Image 1 (cartoon, rainbow, N blue to C red):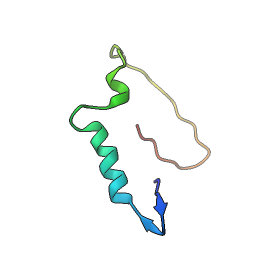
Image 2: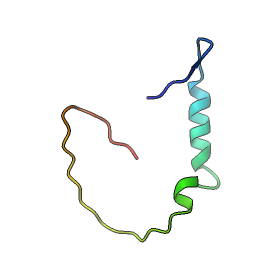
Image 3: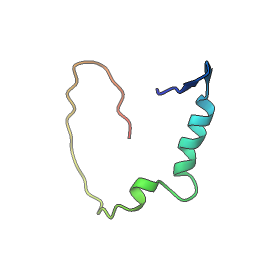
Length: 55
C-alpha cells in the first residue's frame, strides 16, 4: 500500500477519498476514452514470491 507522509502526518484517508472520487460519478478517466470490444482471455502468472494481483 502506498502512504504519503508530510510533516510526520499520514494522509491515508485523503488519499483513499481522492482515489475513489476518480471512479465515482463520472467514471474512470483512463478507461472512459478506450474503445475496447469485450474479449475473453486466459493468462498464466508465474511468480518467484507471494504477491497481490489488482486491477
